[in-house]
Image (cartoon, rainbow, N blue to C red; front, side, top):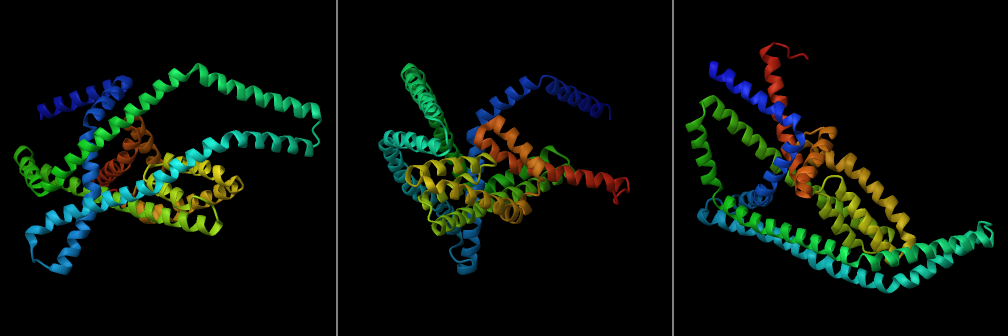
Length: 373
């Protein structure tokens, strides 16, 4: 009893110190997350691929029963990775050529577009009964801004180059994390049964039977929520991309496949993913058919309402069970600690903690015989 009191006292002191020195705490958490990011990425990849592996295993059992059972695991593992890599490769081969072509077109059209914009603006100002002096003043301001941009570019080439190199280094770091994460994921999936048995044995060896059972139940809950979240997010992203493609084809908006692919890929990133895909889509459309930009923006807003009100609650919301407020908080904390990957990981993790905390409150109320609250 005395030992438990001292343990609780030490835990409270550490918690208070962490809150009081929150900057140091966040810095330490960020450093730890950076060190563990390859392993965390590997777990995320393993969870994602495992969703497909389990589906393939179900198909194998339904079709082949128990025949060639020893080949089921390796074959389904290879099929899961091939499916993921096939989809990624297809998207890259579809999007990158269009992206390169758009950049080339933009570089050639930009000078004449600036001239066209100036002429268009002058006509509109005259149509709105602006005086020639006001029109000349606006034109002079535009030329000043254009000259300022050119001067800034000439004066800050080196700084912009260093920023480009910094971005390249960040991308290289992300690629390195993905490669290491892929290696971890392969080992995790190959040894998942042995890891489960070893973890169970270690829990019962170092914890009481009651606590070990609780931890195993919590781990099962985490697996169910994370697997449901990943499967739901992928299904939602696919349906969202499909609806975006169909709508853009019907409305005659250009770059339907490229923008729809971007919308589907970035749909897994909470909040900023949709904004990023909309901005990139507007840039593509402005290059080709500027008059379609307003149509695309209205269509995209309608699509977001369909996603937020119908797709996400029905597909992802049931598996996550996290209120909208805590979803936003989880995404913000995850972004601060681990960037985009942190945002993606934080939502299912916060859902697990929320479910465990809700279960704890329920059990406490049952102990106090206050179930009606």
